[in-house]
Length: 448
Image (cartoon, rainbow, N blue to C red; front, side, top):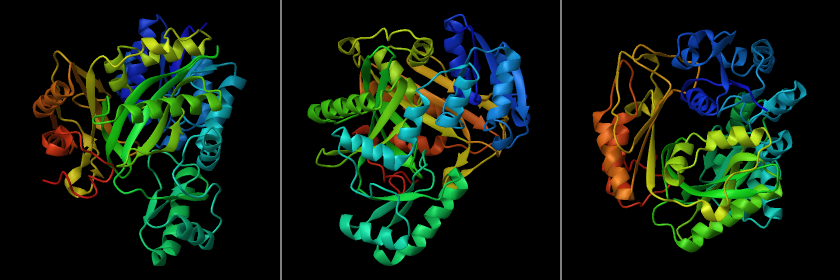
């Protein structure tokens, strides 16, 4: 049984996990780098352990230091949150070797789904359609050119060990592929320690729709319906919602069925998400699987009324899922906006600094997950996510109107944020009518 949980993360996700731990009566342990010594998540935990200097490789990515913090604090379990080590199979394996419960899937599932070419092969073998492209790593620019000719331009080069939209390079014409291949492999090596890339057809204006899945160790696998995640910058999400608007019932059912089949194919246990691209004809293609809790999990919680993090902790200690598939329904609508310390007017350039003033609204249908407060310093070392705004309503229109009002009433001073951009998104006809696709931001659909 779990009695104490160390969260190997920071900011809003650490606080979210702590809240679930308190609900279950579990002791909480925070870890922090020197840059986060005064962060809210550190104060909220029952115990806090310093793990190194500000750079992530010296702290939040340092497996040995995190395991030492777990030993010193006598934690029983480690919850990885998202980002950092959350999809590192070696970390999951190291936790288990150290006698700790890893709150997530097995190391094998993480490894299989973390290798994007292996994931594509496994999903194709399970009968799930994947985006046309290479089934193996492309060895050099010549091989990339051959595959690109077969599948047609435009194409996109992706890191085999990638995730979070990092390291993707689009190529529109053959003469650009050699340079793009060199760029993609260099980025892959820098970000993931592996230069391997693969190639896919770049779909024109698809939607990005994902399915939340959950499995236990007793043979149960369920889905918790879909989320729309099409509004993105640099392949990273900015706005998510559930249910996905204007999604045909047959497509919705097909996505859910494919996601459950994919999770079962790898014996998946705990929370995970299968991501798909959906084209204008309603055809969908497997994109990747995230073997962790998603940033956008609150919209699923608000729509279904279920607590995913509590379920993660219970399943991690061997309990059965308390839900049957037929009981999991989308009972209302919800939308989430991620607020980053970034300047949209300068290409979403990070804006580190001190949060001098922070005023966020509260009230019916409003949920806020924040990692900062007035006086917090936003460091240069980590992802600049400040907080997430989530609203729900009995209808999509109500949730959207509520979010628009929340954005108008939110005040952040001291750093630039994405709030002005998000206000334009919520005011746009495209968002209001649910006509969204993944290339809207780069095409300037929401420019002021």
